Image (cartoon, rainbow, N blue to C red; front, side, top):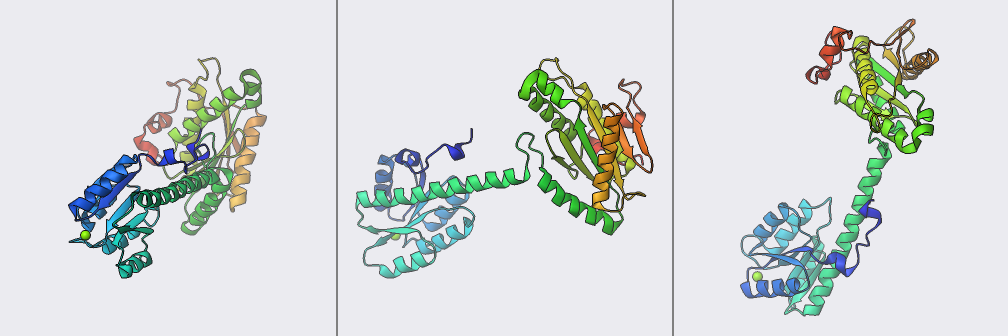
Length: 351
Ligand SMILES: [Mg+2]
């Protein structure tokens, strides 16, 4: 599935087509370098000085740069220093082209970050060998960087739905709670569970279950704002943190999700799913801490389940349990208004 795990980046074939920029003010050297590199399957672009080389790299897609040392406008050494500064988070190999006797420039070049050098007059075989060695290192570097980015992504996301995972949510909830406490801001929490998912799994197998989980995830993301934090908790449980949101706003969101899931059809209309929802608000009489907020939402969800599922329970001073009307005409005016995307920016518009 992912090329990260399936491609060996160090084979010669993997290097073919790499894009190399050749910077030299001397036309004969430039053309010679270009023709040798092209004949080995590399895509070569030539420029006449360091300035042009830097500009070309800035446009992206370059895998390696060959820099002559003595060039007008911007010398090879100056260009090398700039290129290494520009590409500090990636690896762009820079190879200096020097004359054999110019040891001082070579030493200076390597000190400021050049990765290798070739000497004029150069030997074709050696040039290609050095270029390929550098490109192999770059490929490995890119490969590791890609794998690392994927791991970072996985470490905070749930793979099936792309929502945040449990660990990330706990971190964010702590931050949001501290903020709400400090600024006396309301903070709502919604816990949501898919009813009878095990039974649906038994009927349609895991693929149906996964489809429903993804459908519910989509209904949730359609119903919340950018600032709300949505995570998948366990197999069929989701938790939503709604900063700066009062009771009425949280209930509006819960209703919106409940309606969208109820209206959805899975696998050629054969299956439907319902959800149970628990809503809790900080601050309220029994909710003074982060843990109490989570407990309250859980308690409300448990009550919704106990009463048969497919309903919303609000943990207020006394549990308030209800099933929203399904017909559009019966729907409260508030819900109709808030289904519009524009008003979704603020859940508490009417409060
Ligand atoms: Mg020159």
